[in-house]
Picture (cartoon, rainbow, N blue to C red):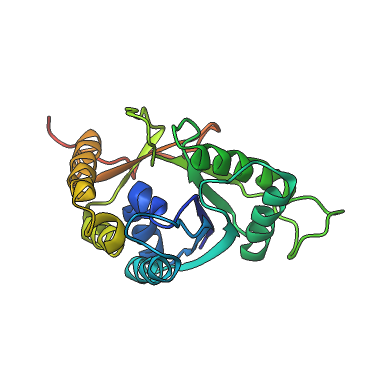
Length: 232
């Protein structure tokens, strides 16, 4: 089974962007680690203790582990220090697959996080560098969509999350300070459901999550293509 690291600028980004996929990968026996760049605070209804409790609960719902790198919310910048923090996380986990937010975004933390993780993927393989763990170069780098732009994704592939959708909704709602208490944010869960239904319809399933990759995927056949042979 694979060792997978999912990087998010703030606690809840991973759940919003790919919570169903995280749950599915964990169910399949993969070793999935969520890595939060910051604690996500301050926010209007949250605080560090509350957000930590909520993020731990969300990880429990999805069946995965979580760690935080301690960068400052709203001040994430691409730097050697940040790259080495992320490279250290990749090496400690020996991540073979890495996920990060899609690289076009209106939120500076999101853009910076993805650039940091992209470069840290390279740093993690270096031998003459003072980092924890053994050198490793993750085989795959995938982008999930959790963007502040009104962007319509054109994904490279879509993951079937039909059986994991309820766990995704539950993991999002674990962040009560973000999506339950603030009335203006309560509609986000409906947007997520609409998105899952739409992307599921593209692969003839009940729910889906879109992903992008800059590197080609290799196939050994078409046996697992969703909808193959289905009536039209």
